[in-house]
Length: 89
Image 1 (cartoon, one colour):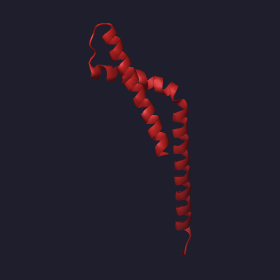
Image 2 (cartoon, one colour; image 1 turned 180 degrees about the horizontal axis):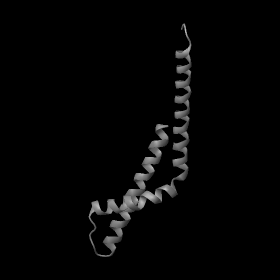
Image 3 (tube, helix red, strand yellow; image 1 turned 90 degrees about the vertical axis):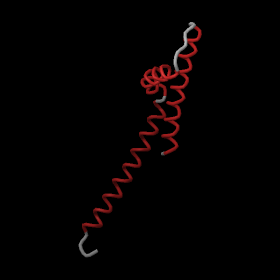
Image 4 (tube, helix red, strand yellow; image 1 turned 120 degrees about the vertical axis):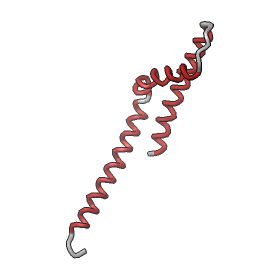
């Protein structure tokens, strides 16, 4: 699960970096200096919805793995509660 989360987070961070670099490059072509913090801020804002579209399969994979871990945790909890309810044990 950690690997899937890391891949999704890494892809989102790379997308922000690419968008920020593009903003800075376009600014330089236009003869303007775009501060890094401004480029990154706009990169984050643009990457939020874009990442949801571009990385849908990664996000679905993460959600599936989290659901599997939650289901296993619920199963173990039910099993433990069942054992605790049995008298004499």
